[in-house]
Length: 99
Image 1 (tube, one colour):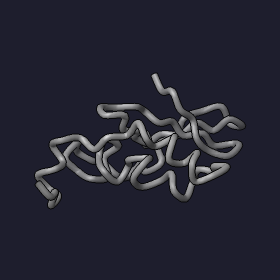
Image 2: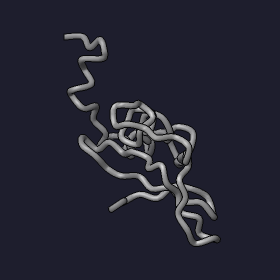
Image 3: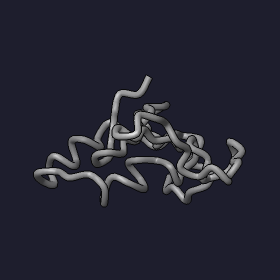
């Protein structure tokens, strides 16, 4: 079940919270006027290891979407909203993390 909805009438997209507070954008949207679901990229079949899959890094709300698509009243509010997100430890192997 999605806890978060984003979009502008008539389109709604849904965010799913995964591990470490990570919010992922689903590849389906709800059209409130037409009353039906539709796939945003119907010609694409993505495997879970593809970065564009809904579970991948390019569909991460905090890292890729929110800075442009979320209205906030202040920088402090932005910090508070994203403070729950923690990078999963398994990503450290792809990043140069100082010890």
